[in-house]
Figure 1 (cartoon, helix red, strand yellow):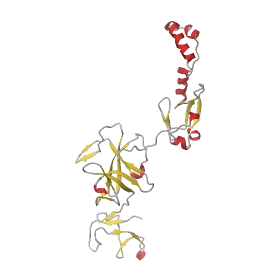
Figure 2 (cartoon, helix red, strand yellow; figure 1 turned 60 degrees about the vertical axis):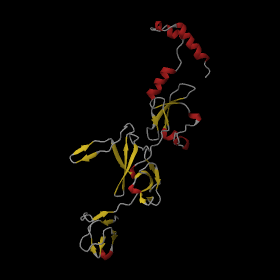
Figure 3 (cartoon, helix red, strand yellow; figure 1 turned 90 degrees about the horizontal axis):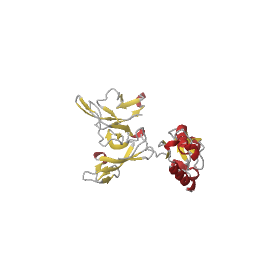
Figure 4 (cartoon, helix red, strand yellow; figure 1 turned 135 degrees about the vertical axis):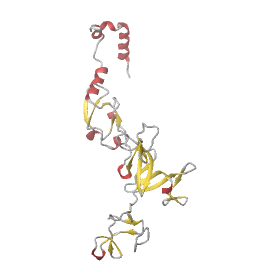
Length: 266
């Protein structure tokens, strides 16, 4: 259950800073002090919920430049929270996040700032396309728009590098789609494959495609068909010259091009 800290005294109250924990003394199932039940949700003027830290600060920015190492929550005897934070560790899984890291969201946003409010850590991010990040600000009745937004620390994950990029420029990962298409380099046959059956192995999770699978990959069947149409050799010189637009081709140049293709052993 939740804990509460006394932030303002009242008659017969404990000292400011006292931590109130749930208790079943005297038959009360809740919060009790000196035998009297306390309604912490009603008297928020006096009692504030204690939010346990879900982070550990690792490095902070120093005023004169450079980084300071945080040891036991302090740098040079000063609480790390008094500095601008550069890097933190998330406690429940040990994941480390640093200013400049890309995170996994629709925009592949970049971490710009860590902000602490009552032990709640906000991770301010921005779309990498913006060169001048700024927070939304409010001044009285005037609200300034910003291009930054925040996530709670528990909700973010590092950006995962795509498994590979297709010939038509689409990044493929384990979440992007269920099916894609490939053409072996030794023929022009279009094949489809399921990502979940084909790519879920340790090599591909690291972004390394096994040598035997180095084919030409496409995000859709239409893109694969377009590639075959534009690249598969299937016309003879006579086919071209006897077409209705044959006059547009220079026969001599066309023969030279075909000879080069035939003699090309790469």
